[in-house]
Image (cartoon, rainbow, N blue to C red; front, side, top):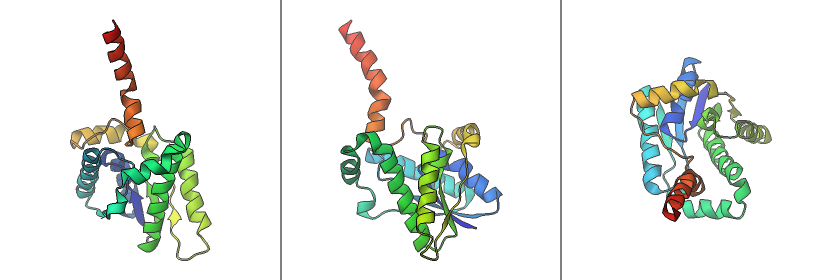
Amino acid sequence: MNVLLHICCGPCAIMPIRRLLDEGHTVTGYFYNPNIHPLTEYLRRREGAEQVAARYGIAMRWAVAPEDYNTLAWLRMVSAQQDKRCPLCWGQRLERVFAEAKAGGFDAFTSSLLYSRYQQHDYIAQKAADLAGNNAATTPSPIFLYKDFRPDWQEGINISKEWNIYRQQYCGCLFSENERYAKTLTKSNEALAG
């Protein structure tokens, strides 16, 4: 099948691309991640995706219109429902990859989000399946190619280190970055308070 793979970053793309290619699929990567903050982080992750795609010799599609990276619009979308920010974010990216796959005539779509041990795997898989199923009446419609890439987690980490691909330390948004530093800030404040 001709598969469009949503890629969130280079390290998370390594094993999904490998598995899909090993299964005989033609893979095209798609980088769309309006949640990533700040811009320097976004650019590093985009570069990592590009490096991994080049290693495998796969084509990439890039969401490069000004509205495709608009962190203010993304923050507005999730700020009113912070308790649902992750599902809103995953949903936005899956909707976009589905639309891109449909417009591009791909047979199927999937996402490197299904590789992460830190994401809500079942929610992501169900959302993608719903997108494909809910649009089945409009042909041609790409199918959702479900793959549980999580068993390849450690191998992907090892390869990303070997290839020297930028490895991020948080999911991507301002909220997850703040969560990452919360413990560090608490310890620092406690040290100052003495």
